[in-house]
Picture 1 (cartoon, rainbow, N blue to C red):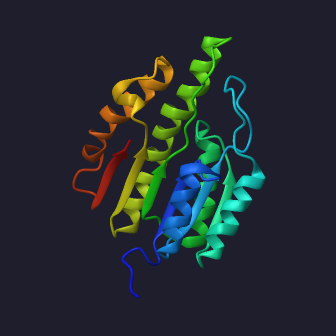
Picture 2 (picture 1 turned 180 degrees about the vertical axis):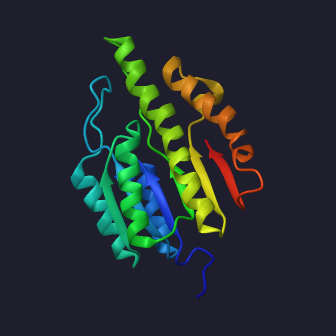
Amino acid sequence: MSDFFSGKVAFITGAARGQGRAHAVRLASRGVNIIAVDICRDLPAIDYPNATRADLDETRDLVEAEGAKIVTGVADVADQAALRAVLDEGLAHFGRLDIAIANAGVVRYSEDDDPIATWNDVINTNLTGVWNTCFLVRQPIIDGGHGGSIVITSSTAGIKGTGRHHHRDRRYRHLSRERHLPDAASGELDRRTGHVS
């Protein structure tokens, strides 16, 4: 069966488990090759364990079980140079980029012992990391000349709030920033930018 997605390439942050893994496996089932990145270490102010390298390896195995190819890499989305290195490795391997899913995100659930550290970890991942992802994928999608999609995942917390200001503020900023991303490459690229809460 012919599929619109077959042969395309997706770059997915936060891909070691959860929604990121689900996006990777679903796209792989449609014939999309994957560039998967995750931090694979804990952040000091976040009160639950982050994904591990073993989780990222499991995503790799699940994608390959769908018949797709995958390049995996470990990087903090807040570290633009490290994120670029993973993207560049995937581009060298696959030669194109069609889809980017800025999915990596964190939140603190318990009371903050150090609100500044929590703010920094959440904003670095959820805001700076999303900006880095969108910034880095823009040119490869343009250079491909065949259009593409940038998807920013978020949460309904950006609309109704959670009481956790750093999480809520990030989600609201996604809603407002995503509205302006299409203007950034006006006329240069047949692509869509979307926000999923």
